[in-house]
Image (cartoon, rainbow, N blue to C red):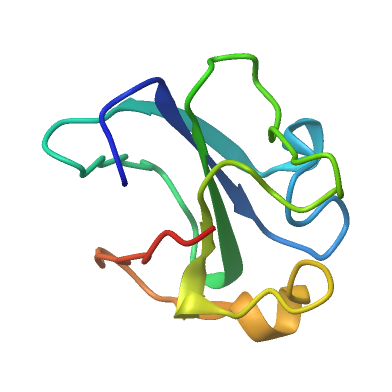
Amino acid sequence: MRNDKGTVLVGLYKTEDGFPFNAVKAFKGAKAEIKDGNAEVDFEDVPSGVFAIAALHDEDNNMQMARKPNGLPNEEYGFSNDAKATFGPPTFDKASFEHTGDQVISIKMKI
């Protein structure tokens, strides 16, 4: 992250429904503190299957993405597979991965 302000909100999605930023429809959600520009979340009891992750650096802790006057994001975000957001968020398919057990997924945050 570009700074240690706020928290990181992370959603783990099992389907495209709600992906990427409808936390209510996420399979699991987590909130993490930021330390030295990094944050870590741990999802437990996740069955094997196809999933996608969306993350938001919620600098102002208002539980939603801050936007510039032109509508573009003003807070960092990222997706599994480092799926690119061009003219809107990536699709579930572009961000999805096969989960088969313990694994580490790293996401590069961007704005």
